[in-house]
Amino acid sequence: MYTSSTTLWGRLPFLFIYALALVLWFALSHVLFSTSQLSDLSSEDHVIENLSVYGLLIAAIAGVYAGWISKERIWFLFAFFMLFAMLRELDVHSAFMTMSILKSRFYVSPEVPFHEKMIGGAVLLLLACGIYKALRTLPFTLKRLLNGDSVALAAYTAFGIMCVAKFIDSSSRLMPSLAPLRLMHDVFLVYIEENLEMFMGMTFAMAPLIFIYGYTARQGDNDI
Image (cartoon, rainbow, N blue to C red; front, side):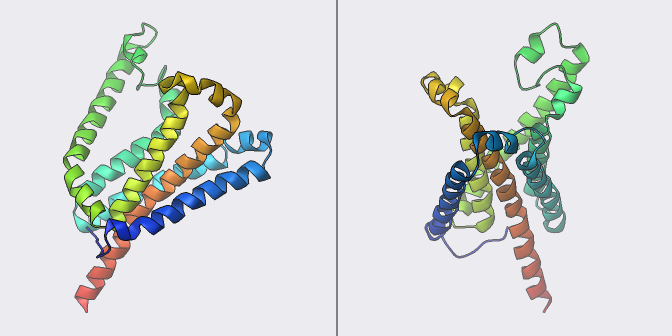
């Protein structure tokens, strides 16, 4: 995997600037856009959601290419998760399934046909296998992160953004005391969530692209 001599501490200014840019973007959005405009921008099939999908698609394709040129299987696992996230963002399950396969009610409801439950179970089993393999690579990727590896930093930054977005999405369920706040600022919080998912996709895409750039640069140096 492509690495650099900079430690994680040396990367902290980058993380600070990235976080500050996000905060400034949301602050400007709150000032520049009306509530109806924010609602339109974060609605289904609008520009922000489309950019999220494009980012995840680029991440998946670049991940496959990174795995192909380097023969590192971790990139195919990365591409699998990016593809799953992209399909989830597109709500593909809604088009072919009675309800989300991630809900326990899907497997116990008599309204759901048996063949759908079988397909949903197979997808979850495949996802569980992917998660198990990802957990096995955790010590390796964390070591890369602590060493300041740019690829690991991009991937873990994107993962952190995803966690924040999912927390905002589930905040009223996870912490009922936040429900009044969520109701009061629902449009702006949805806008923040959708934007975070957009930045998540773009940041995930940076990981294989950085790797490909570093790998091809090293191969070029070796050919000289």
